[in-house]
Length: 150
Image (cartoon, rainbow, N blue to C red; front, side, top):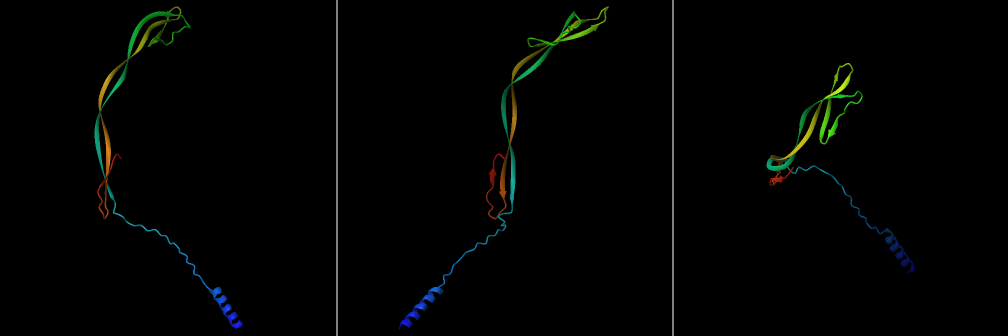
């Protein structure tokens, strides 16, 4: 009987050794395809104008030119240069005169004075603004979608 028991034990051990457990593994196959979702779009662009009134102070500068006769003799080597008297630019005009000796005489001065004045200015300015509306050509025929300030 011991042999039968041992044989039964050996057959149980063989079954345990031969017991198989299946292992399952999943795989992913990924792909892409192009799908047409519509036939296109149409853009409608409109331009609107808005008139604005601007007011600004402008500065205008005028030049006053005055010729002042001088008739003054100048010593040689001391020629007068341009100079300012306040806001007036004084430009000496020289003349070479032939005498027994040659001397410089200040013939005249040109005085240039800048005067500024301010005046209010009102002007009409037109500003333009573009608006875009998109019309889709697809099966659902969705409503037009307005886009603003593009």
